[in-house]
Image 1 (spheres, rainbow, N blue to C red):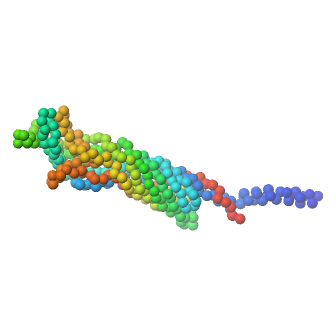
Image 2 (cartoon, rainbow, N blue to C red; image 1 turned 60 degrees about the vertical axis):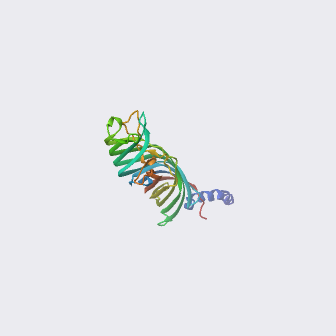
Image 3 (cartoon, rainbow, N blue to C red; image 1 turned 180 degrees about the vertical axis):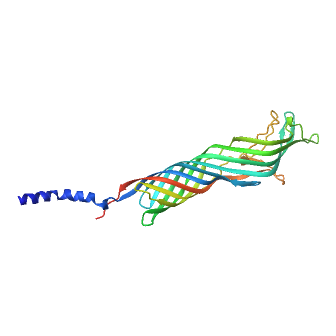
Amino acid sequence: MKQIKVKYLLKRIPFLTMILFLSSPCYAQYQEKHEISFVANGGYNTLKYDLTAGKQELGPGGGAGLGYTFFFGNFFGIGTGIEMGYYNAKFSTPSFSDKYITYDGEENFEFRYNVNNYTEKQSTFSVNIPLMFQFQLPLFHDEHLCYLALGGRVGFPFNSRYKSSGESFKTSGAYDNYGIVIESPKSQGFGTFSNQKYDNDIKFHTMYILSAEAGMKWMTSDNFSLYTGIYLDYGINNIAQKESKYFLNYSPDAPASFPNESILNSRFTPQNEIPVSFTNKVIPAAIGLKIRLAFRFSEPRGCCP
């Protein structure tokens, strides 16, 4: 009888060993592999441009979206996703002027104008597709990690607009054939037009942006992490569609109407009498705080002996 029991136990040893192995706490070690996150950021999300006149104010903005990161090991991963961004900026100048030859319906003349206390706000929404390489290291006895992410994003602008306000547009017409300058009547587009406001669409090219992030990754539970950090974006291409239009366009069909162009794609004539564009290059730029709430999917990574 004892011999039978010994044989029975010997047959069950592999099964018992597997049970003990699976129940061992050392086996409950998992490799972080996939991560889905909800992203929100805010700070100065602006349209940065070089100016030949006036001054620029950086605009507050931000964004939100979804992200996915695939980890190749404990320290390195690659991430992408889809995000919505909002960028804006403001331009102001006390005065500027321009002049050009145009047609009044009967003959050519030189259209002249002076603009006083002009402000303009540009804004755009953009769908951004990031590609980021993430490196992370443990801190505080492996409970939390610090991270650094480098890469870029491609942005597709939409709903881009500019809103302008001018204290006064003073216009006149110079007729060289008669040696006169006409400053009235307003019905013909000559005179002082006060409190001019305008709101219109503006077109931008696709954005190509270099990006960097750095901060802490707080391991709040076995499956959730909270990222808190700072981000920096800087565009590498000119997104303005440079057309060098006249800021004010005289129309013989509606001479008293002056819808103005944006300073991002128009020109003026400074004192040296050479027409120049208001801006030379327009790029998206951003700096601020970013938060990510991440859900982790893990895979077994082995067992202690």
